[in-house]
Length: 281
Image 1: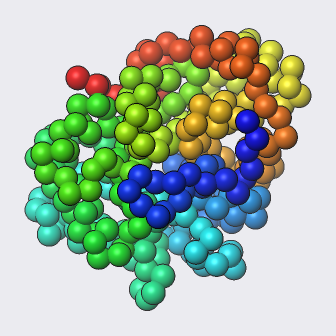
Image 2: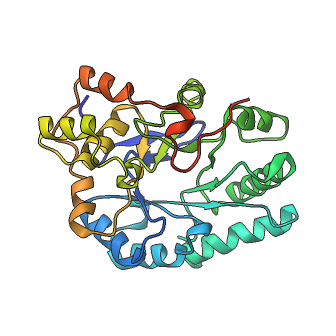
């Protein structure tokens, strides 16, 4: 299938579209500068979080880029509730202000619950606060991260907005999370892939190196292209300007169905996760 860096996906029950390639800034040593390099390389989607402590730098990079705000897509995340729906809502608003300042462009495009770890009551508090943020126009879409089937099903009891529009998961050949991936696709939930290049831990894997040599690409480019062809939204991260550009140069080749099967066969289930494999029951 042919892809382009300008490709977007429709979010469920929304007119919002999300770019199919994003740029991650977790543990970025120079977040603002790297975000600028990414925007110059053609990325239009930056993924940050309260936990990363670099929302302000992302916002400044966006403003300095000169790219119209409507052409950009910014995601952030909240990891835990603040004790009440009102306090949690205030915490969300603080993120929006960090990224977008005040005024007509004071919004983010997607706000996620970063983790399922706050328990049923905490997850409910977070989601209801996000629904309020959406209703107020301070975010254009809402979703979750590291949610299994049980967590998304649980939301039906209280959610006005269901399904969540996005679920961001650790996804790569060694951790394919097939149960939640299939569930999300059945319900139209866009699946984002964090750690798509496995933090380079697999750079010397013989199967991966062999495919990189076959296609004349880097191992990172093979993994990002794989994620695209799995219908995931990959979020590769780098602070190296050349690598940032190379990670977006994945549109001039196609991994064959036979080689996709080779990569699929690398799946180790939960044991293949380097961050988190979700629980589905």
